[in-house]
Structure formats: C-alpha cells, structure tokens
Length: 284
Image (cartoon, rainbow, N blue to C red; front, side, top):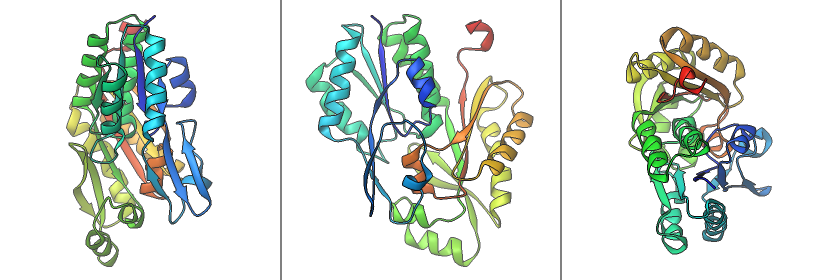
C-alpha cells in the first residue's frame, strides 16, 4: 500500500493524469436553472459551467465521508493527504477536517489557500512522492512546500460572473465596467485581490506571465496557463511564459476547472506558477 492523495474538483489536473497517479477527487456542485451537475474533475463542459445564473457549492458531508473513508481503506494505514481549495472560497476544507477527525485522526488535511493548478502542482508533487513510496509526513511536507511557493494571476473579460458569485463587490464590478478598467487579479493568501489595473483585456493578459515570473524569480518552475473559452489567448500567454521563465520544468495549457470557470466567465485567462521540487533529471 502507499499514501493516498485526495484533492477536490477545482484542481485543473487533467482527468487521465489524476487517474494515472491515483489521485482521489472530492466532488463539487454546479447549479443552474437546468438542474444540478456534480463535478468530479472529469473535464470541462462549457454548456454546463459558463452561463448566466450558475452557482457552485462544495461537497456534502456524505460525499466527503465516502471519499475519505475509501481513501483510508485503500491506504491501509500508510496515510491519507487531503489538499483542498482555499478555505476562504469554499467549505470543502472545513468539511474535510471535520470528517477526517471522525474517520481517522491521522488523515492530514491541507488548506492550499489557492485554486486550480496553483493548488494542482502541490497535489501532483504529493502524488509523485506517494507513488514512490514516501511517508505521509514527507508527502504532506512536500505538498506544503510547493503550495507555499505557488501563486496565481488571472484576468477576466467581465467582472459580472465574479460579482454574481460574491467574489468581488458590486461596486468594484460597476467601476470596472463604467471606467473600462480591467483588473489583473491575484489569489493572495486564499483571497482574490486586485494586483493592478489596465485599460484593455489584451493588456491585462500580456502582464500575466511577467507578474508570475516576478513572483518566482529564476527558480526552477512549473507553470499552467488556463482559460475559459479563450484558447487563442491562452496560447499567446503561453508563448510569453516560455520567454519569462528561464528554468521552466513544465508548462500545462488547458481550461480552468469547471467550477472555477463558472465564477470567472468566458474570456478569462490565468497563469499559475509553483516551484519545481522534482526536476526532470531527478525523475529520469
């Protein structure tokens, strides 16, 4: 047996990659006038996630209990490490802590204080070590080290989706539209804050790679470029990333996780960056 790694569906880890590494997924819920969709991290679906009036919620107590109980049984005493999206954005962390205490006090639950691949890179690091037979303490410590160095920057084409989801104030959304200000947003200590303001969406996108590079410097890095219905813009930002990061170990390009996409809306683009603790040479 080995340590089992659990995360939630907001991590933008490709489903096949999660399956290959044995990562277990806590489901999230997307609700709209068409009904409810359970997001198990199995892929982005624009027709479900990107529409007006969509809201999201964390996993139920029963769902968390089911996933953590199965993970503990699978680990068979080797340990379970759970990494959730920021506790400021979801109840997933608090629900996981409460259920872990009832199932097995040895289950480690980590608040990533992040979302998407800024969290996902920590999950992948944990899963790599777990697959290599590392102890639960080492798996959790390595994940935390990556998460502590991770950061996410993003911009949206409109603030309406963030406002509707309660992520920015109505006043901020109003000013953004009235003054044609496009903010570059940052996830800071688990909360969404404005990093800087620009006049156009294209200018905001052009600053993402440089901001992420300034955060990590010239350290070996893993970078993800995410988007919501904006593949061409993501490809452009990815080219900027290649120029900005001299020690780029991994570049992931793909859509935001479904539940996060619901809050960002069409046209959103983001760059997530994390330190690379395991280099390609180490893995060879």
